[in-house]
Length: 275
Image (cartoon, rainbow, N blue to C red; front, side, top):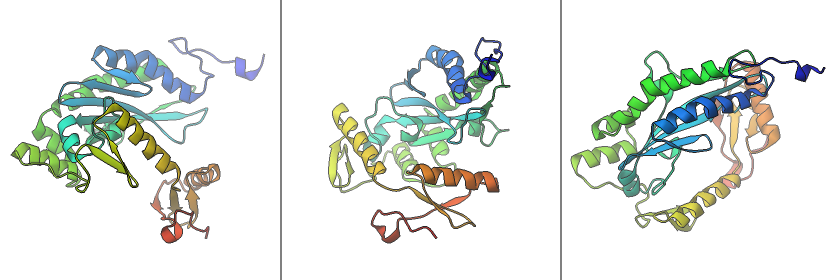
């Protein structure tokens, strides 16, 4: 019998020999998804949303980019998508199933728990999937969902949006509270339109939103994402396999993820030269 076949089972019957990232998927599928479905959420991959009328509540599962076969971590991003405000801001407007990063208000679940600053769950072959899934459900039920519901009040939403600093979206919420018009984030553009480069997309329509999102993804793929490791000087292009490996090696060696953005040399979109 090979070593791969010599593994035990969790209390829920899942294999302790499976890839740890797959164990995260199992925790989501078997415990988190049924709970959120019972609370009125719909699901698309690892994103859950609940349309309450003026606001869409969003719960997005975020896996760590450093996950491996023996250890994998995840956290939860919470979002409040205020439809009218985002429409008037011309900011990710008209979405039916936004993820947390599309929302003018989004925070990690750790911010809803006084004792936690940044809460992550880690699964290894020795960690029970069921226990992890039930703990996530408990924190969603006791902390995250009440945080979302409270954010349906504009005054609370403004407090959420202003937690770190004044932003265009916190200003937009305050304008709504005061009964003042909202200043769009892209004033020269037509209301209800967003642009990628010189092309405008009508995000009031489903086809327009699809085309806009595709254009954004295509645009991001053409731009190198460069970071310079602080104190090391190495420039890593995160759009290449070698760059990602170099960054991971640096973080593991120094036990830090501190880095600074490195713009392309000459602003022409080409990677900066290696030092």
